Length: 173
Image (cartoon, rainbow, N blue to C red; front, side, top):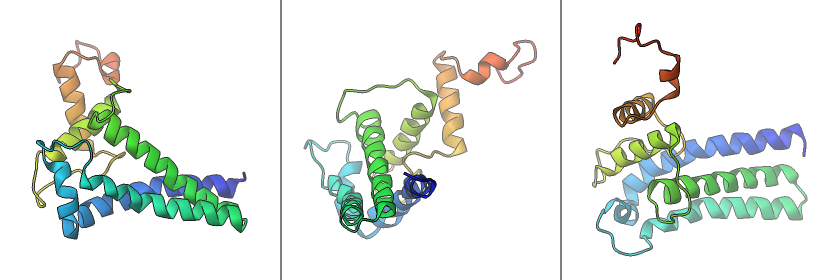
């Protein structure tokens, strides 16, 4: 595993956030809204959603990149495939486990995860095709980070930044 392999893996992983953002904003909230709509329905009773089929958007390029990389052999194609796979695994853990709690084996009180959950809840507050915000999954905006900071402070949870403030000089409280 050389530097090029690691660079392609990391670039693919980071790039997948941009791909997922664009797919979510322009395809899921666009022409394929009828497939994604059940994901925004708070009364959806089934364990599975039509929306779950979007996982194949990530599965096929990952699988065929890994297959080609193994058969050719072309290890840089494998790096690409593993980058997509790693993003898919991260997406699953963050979206399905931490945010929607579809599987209840992992909890977090982490500040950044709090921001992710808050941004996703804001996204789901809009139950229509238009008007939603926060289409990313692993990257959140500054406003979502600030909102998480404020929510945690209101609940009495110490934020790391609070440790560095002197009560006498802190005018934000």
